[in-house]
Image (tube, rainbow, N blue to C red; front, side):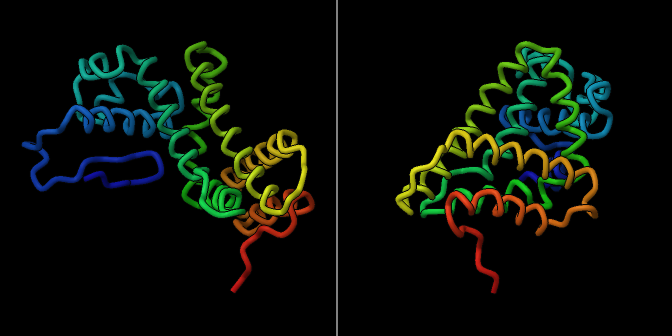
Length: 215
């Protein structure tokens, strides 16, 4: 069973770790979690084969086996980090649920901690240096943008509104990104309610009231 130690560090629970046999999928997940932990702890300079293997208690050959190279593991780590975020942006089943769930989840305490920030800063820094990672970033960003479009479109359609959904999506994503960064850097400066209210204040002039009712 996977036990989360913090936002980007997972280890395998077992009563007898010395004799536990892991599946290939478990080993792969452990290496990805170890890569995230190393990024959070030491940035890109901490993302070394030796440190990752020590963190995952795995051999160097497993990285080659599962990911071909350290850069292949870095791409997998990037994908895992984005999958975690996109899981919070999954389309809902009722009008407004998509946008509300995105705001509440993407700006949650779980996704706005220092370890997550350090890991993302390291990954973003490498996007400029790695064409392969840049392609991965573009693919996931497009997926994220599309999910936001779906949420805006559903909310507008439910109210029979015609709006420039593409422009609103760009504003919304930019606001989310900025608020997420500020919340990670200095959580005492902006409360969790402050950042949520900012998102609703952007969307509601276009869509009408969507924020959850208090009480």
